[in-house]
Image (cartoon, rainbow, N blue to C red; front, side, top):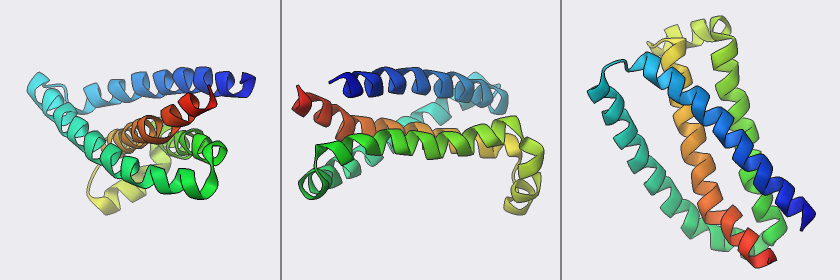
Length: 137
């Protein structure tokens, strides 16, 4: 139970750090309120769709690998996507050639990586982590 409590607290702290940073990048990329709201609306739709897919897959993951493995998927997703996002935020010059090849800017890549990070981490939390937490109690 102590390890589960550590996971819950760590997830809350990590997602707050990432989300605040992401929303700052989002505000820089979309200074217009209508564009900002439009992006967040699209983001909410994507998060909902990803969550539905993860809910459908979550049962198979729980049956095949057990609740311990399923509970660690959320921190793993948060770690991998968080590293990608923060590398774009902290070292945008490194990503400039990639951004140019994709026809965008490092800022927009950071916004998209942050959106993917938030959608995937929230979907995995809702579909795997929270049910595993309830099963442990």
